[in-house]
Image (cartoon, rainbow, N blue to C red):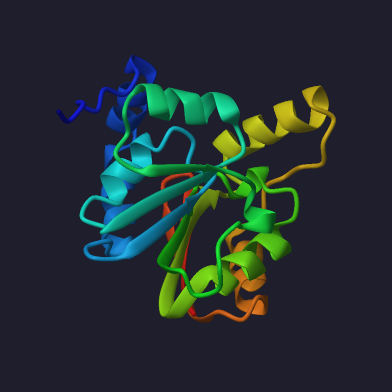
Length: 188
């Protein structure tokens, strides 16, 4: 007997509030028939939307609580505990690697990009969406991170993120402004 996927109410609201962003992410990822890895994908609720049609969906998430929430909801994807700077998969394992609104949480963005490059198959695609440190939403978030968590400002400009990805060996790197952030799409 197959168990029905039932995400938490807060996760369903998260999807509802991000519908346009998720629709654009899906177009850029082109998930159908691919092996997809989402870095920092939380409970996987957004991965389920933009990764619909992928033959395999894996979420790499450092929060055990979010992994438990996904498992409790019976999310039809694979949840793996870990961080983007040390992806626990062999080289060339995935056709798509994504990071949606999580890149600013990575402790070392350059290492995370090199790891994404490593686990992508030749011709694979890396799609990142993160906040631009310039517009008000990111400035407010950065204020709280810097002043209450006592960490440096984790946000990069889209140009900086694009260059970081390019420096990691990716080619055909392009940037697309969207809402309070930008997509960076690159090929391995």
